[in-house]
Image (cartoon, rainbow, N blue to C red; front, side):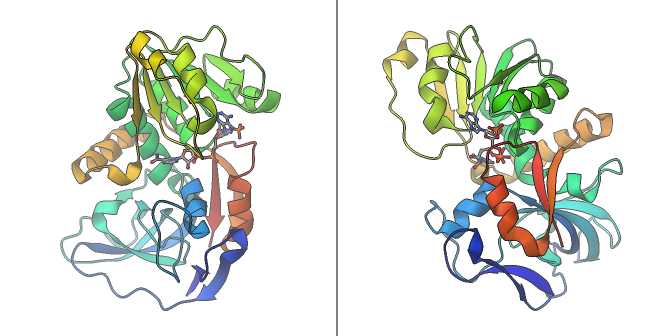
Amino acid sequence: MKAILVRAYGGPEVLAMGEVPEPPAPGPGEVLVAVKAAGVNPVDVYLHTGQYTRKIALPYTPGSDAAGVVEAAGHGVFLKPGERVYVNATGIYAQKVLVPASRAWRLPDALSFEQGAAIGVPYATAHRALFHCGEARRGETVLIHGASGGVGTAAVQLAKAAGLTVVGTAGGPEGVAFLESLGVDRALDHRAPGYLDGVEPDLIVEMLANQNLAEDLRVAKLRGRIVLIGSRGPIAIDPRVTMTKDLTVKGMSLFNVSEPERAAIHADLAKGFASGALKPLIAARFPLADAAKAHAAVMAPGARGKIVLLP
Ligand code: NAP
């Protein structure tokens, strides 16, 4: 079958289409899924640079999110052949993947395969950041700093559904217009000087902490919480600000989620998909062979939801 292979660490050019053996028949607790769409996440890019905190041995097939159809299910698996599923696992940029059944969930009828490929990392991350790490409560104001991307759009929908007032940021007037179309209560341009003046959130979920953490500390309310989802380098801050306002700054990684927590997150997401409150947004589609172009695109400004690959 066809799959993307990374044979050396480097930039997007290291993503090349290759021929690999089909996965074996599923063993107990496993499912074999025919991939119809795969999600592109920034972490997939960090990993092939070889500079990330986690390293994958070469050669490997990248990708962590997909949606598709169950081809075969091992003993004890609740899913049946022919069922539509979304998965969050490893080695996803391929025509077929073998995954633990605990990392596969039924894809709601209302969602396309492309939308299913946008759930695993983005929605679970946004859910964990808002509710588990950030302890978001109805009636509070949340600043979603970087609301236009895969995680940000998911966070907007989750926060609105939970009764929070949502302030979102995106780049440029087009980004602001995009956020307004999502129904945020206030949309701000994170390229404009002083754009956070007058904002006083209870909770901040932060996609680019190395640029924004000092400003987040400045604007956060007394006893505010700041959850760091994304950061691409160091930043200087004055820790005293956290003391004067009793602030909580918490980092989070989806890699650290426990199995019971993951199951609870996806059960809650299923309710949001069923009610229509959660609808993954697709920004762009690329053929699987153009994975390198998709990886360049996900790192470029102007995010509008999720980029997907079509095998
Ligand atoms: P994405 O789809 O590429 O979106 C990137 C987001 O960052 C866009 O909304 C972009 O806005 C925004 N951004 C750009 N410049 C910004 C600035 N100065 N201030 C605030 N936001 C800015 O990526 P994603 O999938 O949503 O992921 C977002 C970040 O979270 C990435 O760094 C990713 O690695 C990280 N992440 C972490 C975890 C975890 O477990 N901790 C899980 C998933 C993702 P514009 O394009 O409109 O400028």
